[in-house]
Image 1 (spheres, rainbow, N blue to C red):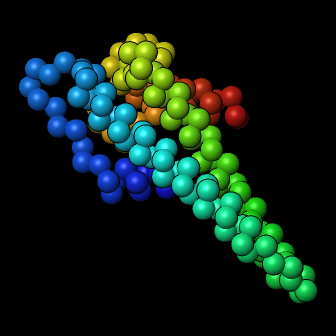
Image 2 (tube, rainbow, N blue to C red):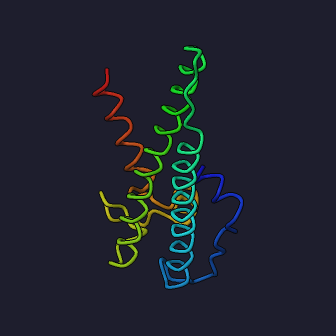
Amino acid sequence: MAEELLQRHFTPYVQHAGEEYMNSDQLAHFRDILEAVKLQLMDDIERTVHTMQDEATVFADPNDRASQETDIAIELRNRDRERKLIKKIEETIQRIDSGDYGYCAACGVEIGIKRLEARPTATLCIDCKTLEEVREKQIAK
């Protein structure tokens, strides 16, 4: 959902030669992206609540009731994921405000414009994220 919004509504940031990393234009660009995604997610959550209230039907057939309950469970699971993403977006906006946005939380290097375009809530550079995923795989085994 959020990835679709990014692809449809935002053009990639074009860096200029010699441009300082995470300057005010870049920060404003990413803030706009994050706030638009957050707004869209909040609208979706609100729409789901109203739809679920409107479609609250009592089916006599147990199969119909089971289908409805399954649909509701899936929808609620999706909305829970989106609620968590909203929290992550709010934390990311706080990092923009504090001046920490765009830098790896583990090693401090620049995350990079392209990576942030793909995942604006990224907190790790690609190398640290890769190491984290390798560690997770080793622990899971």
